Length: 339
Length: 230
Image 1 (spheres, chains in turn brown, red):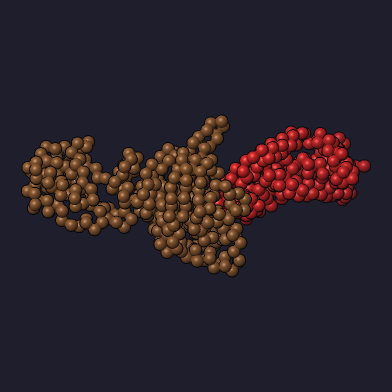
Image 2: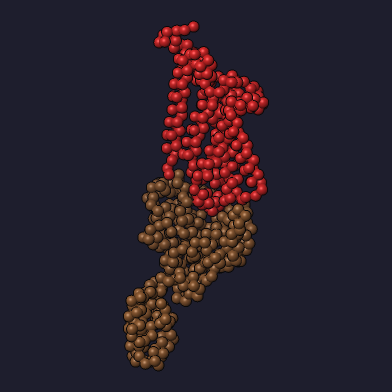
């Protein structure tokens, strides 16, 4: 478990102080895939560098299984570092060493005996699917393969946590998906906690269980990905989860306004998604329902359906129908006046 | 005594003068090359790590070491070699017991080349992607492990090319060794070739120097290529 308490990080760049982290608090439980999302300048990179002890914190605590990382130096710091594996955006592999040697590197540092190193490297290359490439040099690998080596290296010395700093940001979409699946697999099989730093919502939605949204050096909202996706509170969260929204074209709005009725955005989650609520309101409340748009997506293997409908009928019937929806499904919003 | 251009006597004379001179040059370059590369690289490593925040936390000690070494290196590089070779006499005397002769010249050459190699080494390390150094540190590697497992192996091809440049420079500088009786090909070229109007000697030394430089550069290039897997 990682607990970050009131973390501040100030950079002193040529007399000018830049506050990168301003009192950050978060708890990351073991076994989780925890995402940090934010625009550039939000403090994600500073956070990652503080957690991995590449930078000293200005004030605050970073507790790794109860041990404070912030005051560690020298040997005890190096020991604590071995609990972490880092995966970098630009891979940062040893270009003059083979794939095998790259994966072996942390094992050598951790002083594993030779036979064990050999066994472990082959095992890891198997996990990331690069067994045949063990004698190749990184320059001969594709971006996705390089990142697989990066992941194998991060996993090598049996870390408790793996931090992925924009690990997929330099990769194309198909490769990104395969790398994300690999991360999810490893998380499930080995129970390693992953900390994912990204600016891409798709990465969060694809694999993260928890997410923290960063802005201006702080965490402005955090929790279950699913929860934040459906009930975002802050503007930034809403912006990030916009892809979870459905945007009717202007034409559809204009057309639907030409006839009377209320426009409703209904969000269904998980098990209740297939139930025939729309059918029910038509039967029970004497209203007409027109479907303007909708989509279904999966977050964390949970189905989320969003439907935009227009309900027309007597005022009382419309109110009753909305009330019924509100009581039965995850979220009901009247969005008549949204542009 | 003048001989016919292509007479055996003429070649014998050339050989008698140029062969020992070549040996002297090779001796001076080999020794000064070896010592300046080892010491210069060490200083280059210190210069680099004292200016790298990931490897070495910045504090007053690292800043002072970096600044002082930097100043010494700059001073060493700004003194003309012809002056240095004489100015270094006391030091040379301590190290090899005399301040004249080939050995003394080798010491002067070493002193002249160390700052050059140090700067080249520092800039070579600075050219390495700093993410690689961070990755090493993040793996829990100590400073020493990062130096000999990451910094040096990762930059080896560039280091080799830079060492080659340094050695070629030493060959050129060794021409001035004659000032303190160091001998060598440069000495022959200046004293016999230029001052005694022996064009044949002059051309002979130049041919030998060209061949030596070509061989050194070729070996450097091949070694750099073999070690470069990037």
